Length: 294
Image 1 (tube, one colour):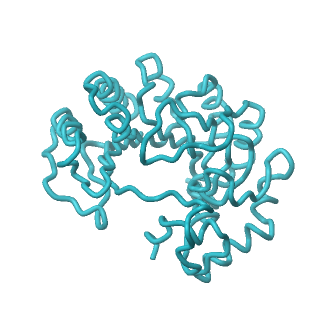
Image 2: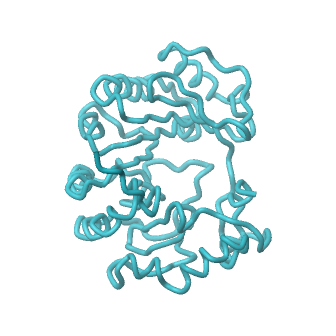
């Protein structure tokens, strides 16, 4: 048996659309123009990143289920043997899309369940949850190797006892025959295995970095450009998945090969700075998320 070749990156975030069907309070609005990535650009990107990464993640901003050519994009990933990580709020999930998301190229699908009550505080989530549960149960039969994550972020209250999400947690546990957890410290544990490869994921809200925010410091490290990087919908390469407005544009895929962009002086200075625990970019100096790596 041939040894598996280690890829350079764990994930490359490809923003196939910056359009979302919801507007969550914990997710900042996109300032850039609304856009869908075209298939030619997508193919060029996947062809270049497939040898570099374990996974292509259909997410940076926006929800990938809004893209009308999602099926074609999955087919392109299959051509280049690029496995897919998908993040969605799940509101647009319908039975006719189940087969599409059960394609062999999917490695993991995350459903951001906390987005429902954030947008529809007075609405019954039964239909929404039933579609996601039905898909999950079908996946367990047809794709038992597929990882599924129910994200239930609840700010400073990880178990949701003070929010409507508590009923969502209870419904999840009832459906998949799991005792409702009574205590969880998200600083020590963020994930619970519910059944097979289905997980419940907790976390707390963070402030997205912005050049408009005050500087937090110049010391710190990050995994941007070492474990992952992002490509925005217009083809701009950015060092991490939180650079939603291209405050650190490293290059454009239509102008420069991606390997050359990653080898540029600016990109290498960022990586060198992280290794020396120095934040060389202004956006990084204003990133609250970096504090998690301290």
